[in-house]
Structures are given as structure tokens and as C-alpha cells.
Image (cartoon, rainbow, N blue to C red; front, side, top):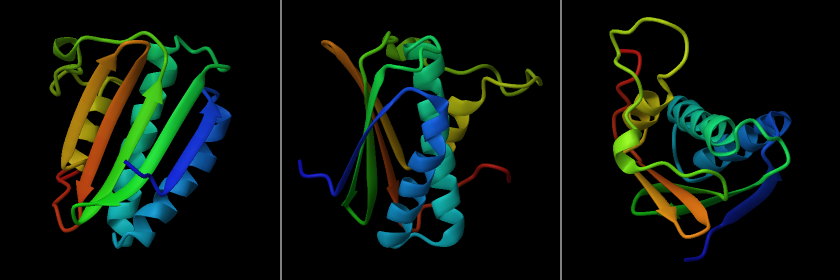
Length: 141
């Protein structure tokens, strides 16, 4: 698979602004409107925050790779880390009626993106996110 953009950066939150800018501009380049660009960027930000917090346990010097490409009338984002993986059944987020800060990132990612797939592989974890142009985002309704 050829990706149009590949970013490699440390798991330091200081780099999240740079990554958000790249994702938002790539989404616009691939035909998403301004609102969708913001939603996609939020989903990627939430996923990267989870990598830093949970896979790397807040270590800020670990490698993260982000790959972006246009595909199937939309865009694909692949995140690769080498931290602690989780089992699919453990990726549930907390209950929505449990009102308190934090813990809703997975819900938001799943509502924003058209498809999500997490692959805990040998020596790395991959999160594949896909957003189809024209698909409805139901967050905040």
C-alpha cells in the first residue's frame, strides 16, 4: 500500500498540534468539507492521545507513525505504535451515562469515522481509521 503522507514522531504531546494540522489539511485535500476535516482531526487526536496514555504509559520518547492516503471515496489513517497492546474486547470505553471527564475517546472515534479496525500485531499495534466522504458524523447531535 502506498501512502501519500507518512509522519514519524515521538509520543510527546507537544507534537500533536503538528499532526492535527497535517491531518486536517490532508482531509481538505481529499475533498472533505471544513466540518468533516475538524471531526476527522478530532478522531485522530483522540486516538493518538490513547496511544500516548495507554500504549506508552505517558512516556514521551517512544515512536509513533501516522500514514495517510486517499482510498474508496474517502481517506484512511493508519497509526502504528510499539507499546502495550490491548485485546479487542477490552476496547469498549466507559458507559455513556457515566457522566464524568474522560473515557469517551473510543465512542467519539467510532461515531466520527466510517470504519475502525485495531490490530495488535507481533511487535506493534495498528489502528486503521477510514472516513468516507459524505458519511454522516453523529457526534454532538
